[in-house]
Amino acid sequence: MSGQRAKRIENSLAAWRTFGPRLRDSSKVFAFFEAWNLLVILVSLGGFAHVPTLVCWSWTTWVVWVIAIVTVIISGVSVFI
Image 1 (cartoon, rainbow, N blue to C red):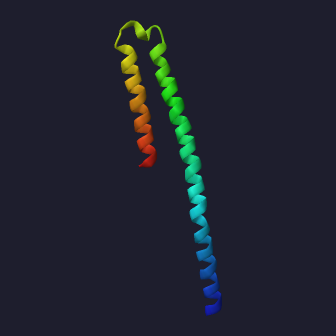
Image 2: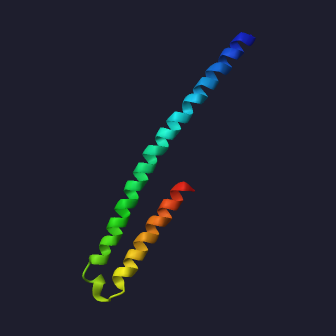
């Protein structure tokens, strides 16, 4: 009975050790995906700074860029939390 139990423990330990590399690979893919999404968010929100109706006032461009950058920062921080 103890031989079977030891074998099950060894199998479980081997399965556990294979989990780490898969988790790292998944994390790398997720980080790339999030970086791509953040880039798209930055470009799309930053693009609003160039819409003629929003650029009526001299401060609009800077406000929209600040909003875009803050959005990217908040999204980026939330990924690591």
